[in-house]
Amino acid sequence: MSDYKVSIIMPVYNAEKFLRDTLDSIVNQSIGLENLEVVIVNDASTDSSGDIIDEYCAKYPNFNAIHLKENVGAPHIPRNIAFRHTTADYIMFLDADDTYTPTACEALYNEISSGDADAVVGRYWRVYDDCRLISYSPYDPKVNDIKVYPKFSRGLGFVWTRILYPILYGRPLEYSDRVVIDDVHENPEILKMLPAIWTKIIRREKFAPFKEFTAGEDLNFVLDVFFNSKIVLLNSEVIVNYSMRFDGNLSITKNVKFQLVIDTIRSYRTAIEKCNSEGFADVSTMINPFFVNYINLLRQGDFDKSEKEMLYREISAIDKIYKKKGIMGWSLVNLIKILSM
Image 1: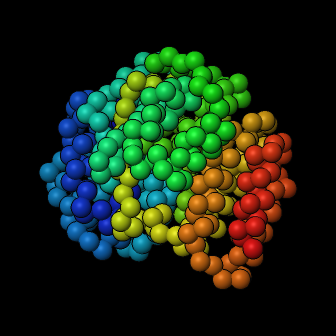
Image 2: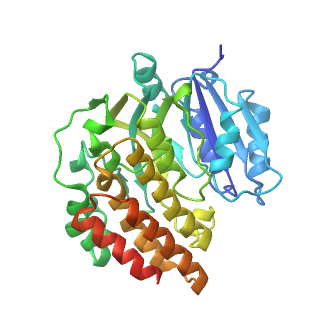
Image 3: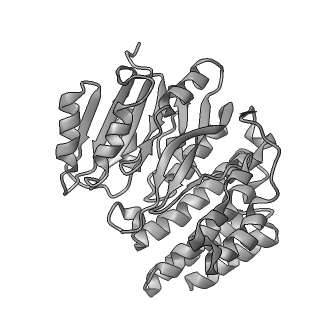
């Protein structure tokens, strides 16, 4: 039996600018630091992140560090390694440049430990330099008033808020502060939410190893958990301050490289295959918003002929397994095909 209520998994790569704030947000949790086990995997950082991690591990005995000798360039391996070193019955996640809100661990732990839920999901703030926006939830869309951020009222922001957003996410649903979902098949709207694994707590036995993708591994992880779980959504609990940084220096996912782009589309195919294997009929609910994001990713890349051919083959493979696309799904898939040529 573990001495801890919650184990927190945290991959780190070159996060020295923000790492102390992140770690302090764990230290200052209302649940009490003595109840938390923190497993940090340093993905061969080249800045002072390793020293900062060791400093906290020396100060707090429940902080444990694993330093990888070679950089793997993606969080899936560090997270899988970290899990093997955890001991608590419940697992949470945090990224190295984000912070927990003060009651995050307590709120999620109290909910999951007092009932029969396998996973509990909170909310998060998107934190920009000059404002914060609360995350979208299909059960509480009204609070995501994206119009309060001036940059989103022009150009592509206008297209997103006025056209694409309503088409992809539909009309607001009735909701409560606490929503219980026994079966994802009967509540497909939950998959409109971004994966955001750091807003969740799961039972240890529900942990599914992260798949080996540079990007999209979180989507597949959430699908693996959700299709096999009773889920509770806490719409009023904000768990994480999610930093929207655009300096391109934090991780491989901020740089548009071919491996990122090919892994992203492969992760989408794996997600669709998972939905198909589960007999989940509302695949478009889950995948179409991701396709919109992928189109933006493609537009930023500069790929040679052989790379474009690989991308085209991947989206063509998706086209074959993506049933009941509807007009929107058909349009997105074919636009991606065109951009991949």
